[in-house]
Each structure stands twice: as structure tokens, then as C-alpha cells.
Image 1 (tube, helix red, strand yellow):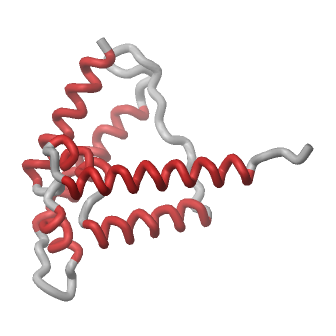
Image 2 (cartoon, rainbow, N blue to C red):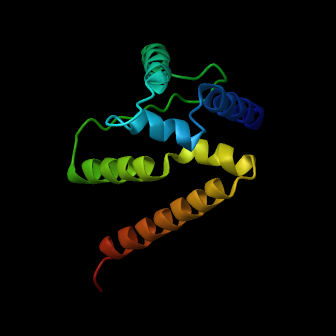
Length: 142
């Protein structure tokens, strides 16, 4: 049953990305181009998403289990460290260069667009490199 609701949520999220224009790299780059032909329409999409998210988290914080009966697992980290800042900066630079972030990239892959496939392949490679670096950094000396 959980898989059905997960697929439904993913489908709804993907449709929202398509309808809002977030899966169109040209539209995203237009939004990020403050010095050129700026397209402010995605600011409204983001404001709407933030409003929904604030409401959803307010409700979720008061619950111990989800509506489906699973444990409510919310983020607990509250500190800002160099890893968060560097990761956020890398994410932002990648988003600004490609006009794509992970959710819309999956929509583009689903649509069979090569740009999405290349982005997801690069994203997975980056995740793999991160894992290798983390394992090497956390390896205990003999």
C-alpha cells in the first residue's frame, strides 16, 4: 500500500513541476537571469510551495504517525556548518548552469530528453564520488 501512495505522490509532484514550468530549463534560467530578461513567474510558484510546506510541517510536527500509520520522521538537524553551505553553493551553481535540479531532471528523463539523462547521470556520478570520499575520510586506521 505504501508504494501506491509513494507513486501517487511522485506523480502529483511531477505534474506540479510540469504545470508550473519548473521542468523547463529555459524557464528556470529566465527566472535566475536577474540582469537580463527576468521571468518572475517561478517566484510565485516557490512562494506557493513554501506556503504549502509551512502548513504541512506545522501539522506534521504535532503528529507521531503519518495518515498511513507510519512513524513521522522529520528532520532534526538545526545547525549550519561548512558542509551545508558548500553543498548548497554547489547545488545552486549546478542549478544556475543547467537550469535543472533533481526533481525536474527526473521529469526530463521520463520525457526521454537527453539533457535530463545527462544531468541525472552526472548527479549519480557526483553522489558516487561523495560516497567514496566519505568512506575514505571515515575509514579507521588499522
